[in-house]
Image (cartoon, rainbow, N blue to C red):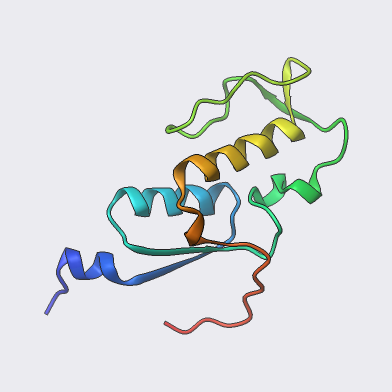
Length: 117
């Protein structure tokens, strides 16, 4: 017998990684009515490759403003240049997480060593 959609939405969902894919996946599941979503990352902040501790000064992307953004949050103009910088991406990822996720779903500095469904 197939579970009802409401029952499926009450199931626990774990997402490992708080980079772009993890953030968007959590956002989509929450929008679709999933109630128990947990986003885990070993990092101290969100962003994946754009996480706060990975950005080095002067990093410039090969993307111009307007080429990258999530559909639910426009990308603000770059802070200091024509091209997006690492700090722009870091700030964008953090803003997206702050404005689209309930903070209780985010597990920062979490080391995942095993998983059991």
